[in-house]
Image (cartoon, rainbow, N blue to C red; front, side, top):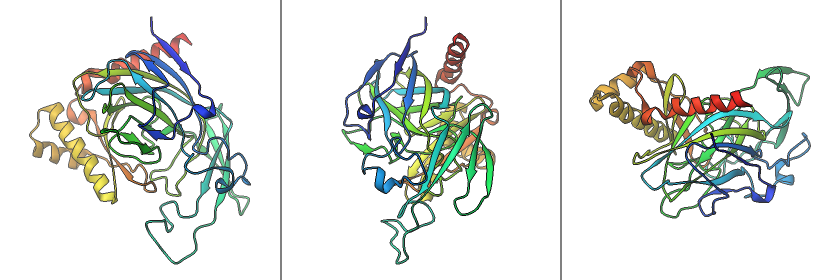
Length: 337
């Protein structure tokens, strides 16, 4: 019988770092984990008059639920998390512009003499039954419905060497990668750096454009179901994703071209290992068959994704077919509900 664990934290139980915090629960491989996550504002931004600079407190932004200790996880292993479902917990989501944050403004590291952008808030009404979010312009009567595409912007494990990282920072441990590819039906693979792995999840988005250009998406609390597995003795250098049709590698760095290189390097070497291709042969194949979706271009590190159809690699079984196994586990869970 499948082990099901539910964890719904109180606000004071949320975490704001990867590393530096004990586990809130221990879960065994094969567990179905039912979670609730808060939005990046901690639920404090609810109307267009709630400016984050006034109602939020730095550094208590971008909370995550966890961390969770995976039984038997040791450095050199890989944790596999299959997102069975990601469902907005409320019928609204919020987005903002921040002074000194975002891709099209001066920041604290890109110093400019012009004035910072205005801090402005947008509220989106979410119609879960119809699967749409309603955008409303603030300075006109323009409105449009956008399809919901729920995802999690932040997922990761504790970094190596005792390091502690803010949840807003993406890196080799995962973190705030903000890739729209991390939706329900996707399995993410995270290399274990410390005993138990200590993974955490948060930063739900009702939808997000590639790059998260203004710095925020449709920020939403989520009810999320995850199937957990452990792949022993197999390392993962950077977070990887798999859906039914694609393999994906991530890279997070600054400048953006280095994030691109990291993701492409990982996909090329991963493809070579899965297919037995010579590295340059794999390089050539990925060069012609690959895609490069953008994660975020606004955080402390930028994130790129390298993506290829599994059919172009003759449908290899990555991580011992963990995605198919966890997908079946998730399907059984949904059927039983």
